[in-house]
Image (cartoon, rainbow, N blue to C red; front, side, top):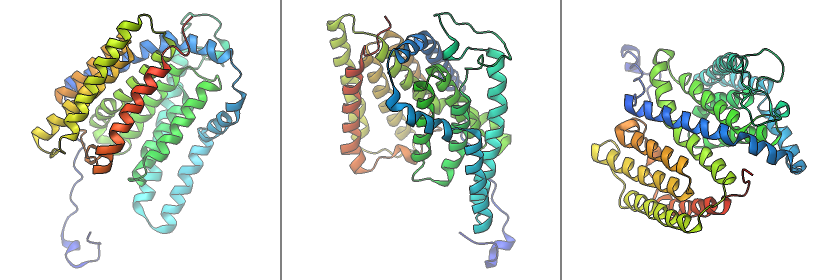
Length: 361
């Protein structure tokens, strides 16, 4: 990379940053359908999960929950951003300074958005919910501000920006954000739907501030496409957890069918790493992901999850993700041959073992 003082650099204008690739309109619309369908499913099972948490002593997790609450606190997040800002100035690293400033802006923007939604929607906190009704209505009263989760949205927005500074270890801040979100549920501060909604809002806002604001439309569209499978996975997890196996024979048939779909998708991915920039390469990756995603949906045995997985597969196949395929789609030989199959097998086993652990009734 040529520095500003090196010979020809002074006479060469800086190249403009290319805009982010924009997913197709059908892909974005289908992803939005997946998100709304997932929220509807989560709202249906929020109350049973609340009853389960109230009926069990989770004191062993209380300390972890308290730490998660402190980590996701606005003061903690602002302090982290300010420390990075100071480090960027002291070390004269403009990239780090820019990341810190963007994280502060993302935090402020998501805080305004979330606090407005909280009082417009007016959903009661779990401690104030005593029946199975929706009980949603605009309100400024304390305690009627459960949806969406402010801690989760702020944390995800900040870590989405900060992950730019950790290209090889970007999973670390997202793991911490997941911890914050999970702690909001098991502490009884929020319903699962509140946390997932906060995650979506935080990721969209953080993605917008990861690039020039004039590209906010493309950035938000790409963020919706990228977050949809994550939300669907969480919905499938909670749905499987709260629904017993009604017909063992049907469940075994769906398990076998889903496993074959997953195996087909894995075989397609492992048959050779395609050139991702070529049309054939993108088609192969999309087909592989679609088969695996649909297979996992079928493995759950839940019609609502299977339906949402099918919609997501249409989104993936329609070219939604042709713009989101990146270097992360290329698996190293070790990951491709060992970690990927092992992870898929473990996921299927976990799905089967979780079915009905927290039944609705």
